[in-house]
Length: 477
Ligand code: FRU
Image 1: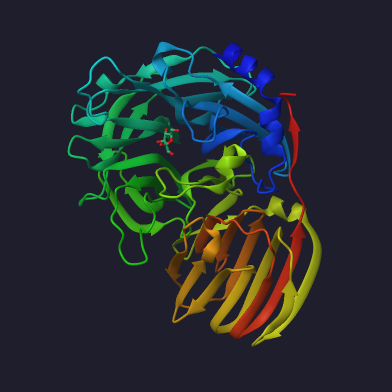
Image 2: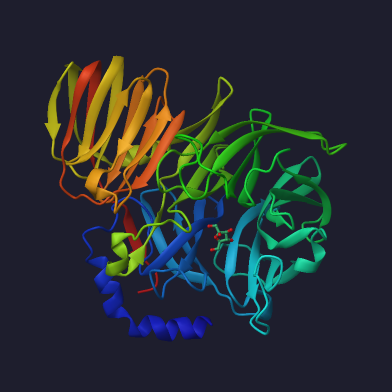
């Protein structure tokens, strides 16, 4: 498979050129060199180096056979692009090396992922309860580049009997001297949940419990993650099949966090404080890890599966990207996402303006970071690009992509008091951190004409920086 890829790579210089010259490509977000990118995988920091693997289909922009691509960085500005490093090249993962994670223990990187299988030998498979295989597989590494042989840990037959074929996306955490694995799952009754396994050696795993809401919350929970912040366990996952409820759950699939109170002696638990991790159009499959400074970092896929729109970049041969890295904190019991400190290195020219009522400052920057500190805000309308606005009215904050969302228009969130906005605008994406990260909007947008101005019944200070691009060294060249 690696050799097939290498042959394909050698023949596709023109394809790479086409993507490289697309004006919609992103300046400070990781995106595929060609083709399709989805979930971040195997996030970790090892000997100072951050490793960012990701779901990758280099061959076409529509995401068919999944490989793992690999970026590394030490500072979140300079990156190394290794291209694909994990291939669906064995019987246990023949139809895709699906999402997974890394866990560092005793100076070894332990990787876990799902080997996807799809059977075509019968025509009565529904591909929910039959026709699919989801193997849990592991391998290790001492450097993030050279991997040991793949070890099959569990097959579809090993999961609880009432599970459908949809069980995937292993993520590990450790509590005292026990390792735990969470897996996203759908049962025979189409209830979404997380399966919890435990192990003493990271090799042999036994089923411990299932974690889910009392009432069904969607039919499948993808990409679960369990981690501790200030002594509180948090579960994040991606439920599918949750009905829209006013301005909540408007996307086809969700990305949520919940507080998890778990008794590891009795396996009793309680889930509470369900919160949508993002209010924009393009956020999914987030994964977290703890770095060597003890920060809990989250990176998400800046895209969503099964979305009912055509991304304009498809015609340029690529699709999707990863979000900027964010640091997670618990503040006053709320899960907060803050852009990582390292992103400040991208700041270039700075302009600052105090405003009352109308903000005279009008910029035509396209790639920028804007910080708005409100003394008060009754209502406002912020133009972020020509024809793309963020407005605050009657306690509701609304992103409106207008004619530039490829058919997608508005997303909203309730905000009792608007105090602060921090906006990262890339060529074709925007990430808006509301009130220091209490709410976030992540979205692609397709308008390259800049216009940044603010009007309304509000006063405060607006600071704008132009932003530099990432510097990426292509190791495949
Ligand atoms: C989430 C997801 C995962 C799966 C992967 C396949 O976007 O569907 O559940 O492992 O993508 O690419």
